Length: 205
Image: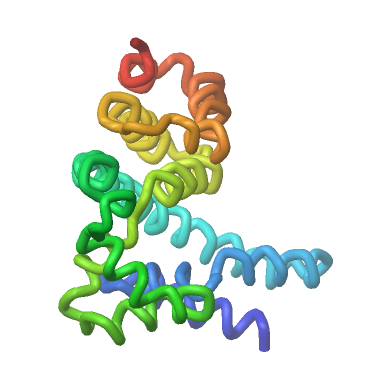
């Protein structure tokens, strides 16, 4: 049954739609790891898991690159929002639009942030809610996680190093880089792809 379920998911993941992304969002990679651990003596199950994981890695790396590119665009907004808050923000009795959204979503964020976002804005405004609730900590954690998860994918490592470069150039707070393991992620990327000039160039001051 497990083998049949994994086999059924593989063509879905290969589809040109968002199926692979949905599988990943539902924890598909972790489930595959668990299945492989439970059925480590079953070569047939392991073969099916490997095929699905190959597809998820390929599709997932493309999704990771896309998300990091999106974060790079958002960094300038976060910088401006931070500067505005420091100048006219809470200490002066004012609250930014982003902070207003965060306050309204706060009761729901711990339970289901995505559901809370849709309650506030609807599906068509998910991007705005994502942007309003974004901060430096979320940015750095996401970049570091993608680089760790897809450590063997050159495209992800290049995008990650480029994102760190953009962060260093625009961010007003560099502490999240240290707490999220950003420095270690760059070092590991250089160690693995030290012969790739384009990657080395992206992290060279």
